[in-house]
Image 1 (cartoon, rainbow over the protein chains, first blue to last red):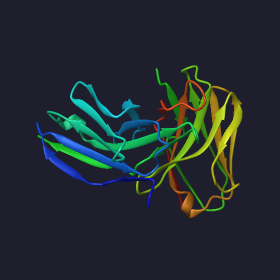
Image 2 (cartoon, chains in turn green, cyan):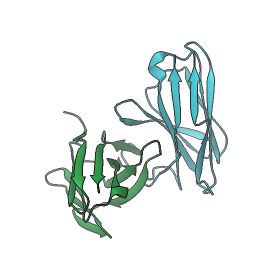
Image 3 (cartoon, one colour):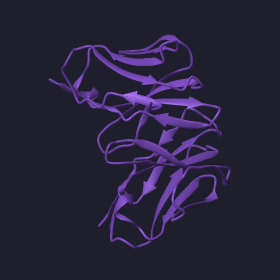
Image 4 (cartoon, each protein chain N blue to C red):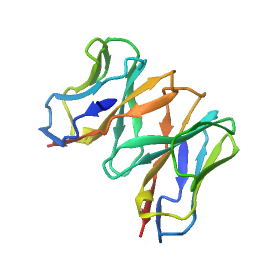
Amino acid sequence: QKEVEQDPGPLSVPEGAIVSLNCTYSNSAFQYFMWYRQYSRKGPELLMYTYSSGNKEDGRFTAQVDKSSKYISLFIRDSQPSDSATYLCAFFTYNTDKLIFGTGTRLQVFP
Amino acid sequence: DTAVSQTPKYLVTQMGNDKSIKCEQNLGHDTMYWYKQDSKKFLKIMFSYNNKELIINETVPNRFSPKSPDKAHLNLHINSLELGDSAVYFCASSQEAAQETQYFGPGTRLLVL
């Protein structure tokens, strides 16, 4: 079983739609749960991170973590064309001091 | 001001050549990283330096040699380039070692012909 699984997409939605991006993981030692956004030909940028189960909201973005199911999600409300990017889930544990990334989901929001 | 910068942005070279990629961060961070992103967008750590000291060294061919002249710079030298080295190489930095919040550079696109 892979340590992190992420649906590669691509996901194509109309402007204004609610988008749900998901990752599952198998390593119960993961302590931090992150979402990075990567625009085409750019480096990843940290969008949100959390370390506990539950929801964390930041504007139109909500990160959700369910440690019991080993499942994390990123919801984007009122999606905009500027949200078109690849979204990478990432996990961190002090056991290894490494960030482990998912393969990314490519999102396209069309006007 | 660019927080983490890399040069060159693009690198096209022949198999067997030796090349270097440079990274600089002006965030005052202690730790810097090299990541490789393959054609399927899979991003994987290669090396990590904290205050010029190597702290993470993944299973990477020894043709790859990182060098940190000071904590603001981390360079990657690649000897005897192979076709499979073609990828995007990202530099990143974090305030301290073992930190979940990392800041990435724009990437260096390496194509080996």
